[in-house]
Length: 163
Image (cartoon, rainbow, N blue to C red):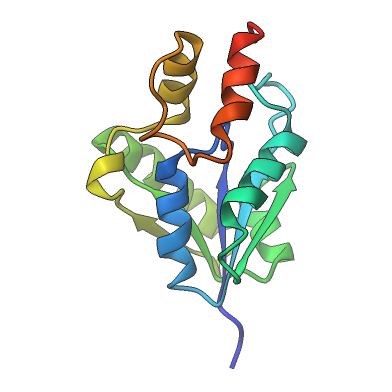
């Protein structure tokens, strides 16, 4: 039987507890989950891609079927290269649905064998986003419920340095 591989793409800038929740839940649904940092060369992130990869590796270390990677280009093409059967996406609010529906249709046109699997966040993470984490960190707010403890120091350091 063919291995069921899924790709969970995102910017993960920085990774949050919401991302980790989705990773844990999606990893239970697939034989292998590739958490893929999408590189946008037009956008300057808080963290460079290599640091996001390190943070994701640290927070997923104990999940044996999770692999961390990065890619440039189309998600549908990256998924094809990985022999993925699905793209995993999170849906928090209605505006996410409209965007994800458009992306799912586009990805399926580009890669007809690719399905999109949308997971709703667990209740504590319903309104959590990397943007909110960056804003709270810039003003030295409490991040303990928002990000995994092993990456909080890196976020604090980056935000303290005025980035």
